Image 1 (tube, rainbow, N blue to C red):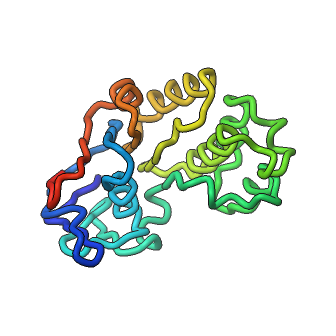
Image 2 (cartoon, rainbow, N blue to C red; image 1 turned 90 degrees about the vertical axis):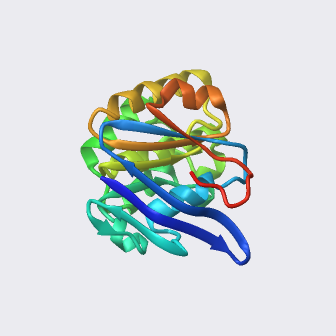
Length: 204
């Protein structure tokens, strides 16, 4: 489903990844663990086409990913809450995305008991509420590959448990990448774990 061939990524003179070769198949959840700033988000951005590899190739369903256009319909990326508009309500955010599956939106809104929150502007949201809105948006795109960057960050214990239960269910027919700097999050969810470090020229 995803094949990484001799992939390297550099920013200027700084090497983030060097000569990575990895293959990932469906029906699994891949945990990405490591402290902040070691490349977890960069790795997920490469898989989504937001960033392009300096060398090598990333293939999703046998198609090379060079940009986000190549990943549309195949990959959904849980992005930072900063992409949300402060003056729009949660409902308006969901209505603004044409590719969302409306039945899944209803299902996930009900699952997280989020209907009342949809009436409020995002500027009134806590971090956990913003995370839930983004998670509902991401999952409702209904792609076979999910890239979830720090998705549990800010969730209260109840919603954290609900999110973990849902992801465990979804991995039955999807490929999910899940990043965190908390070891307990990754070990609780993952079938396989990728460890990211500060080591220069590291190979993942």
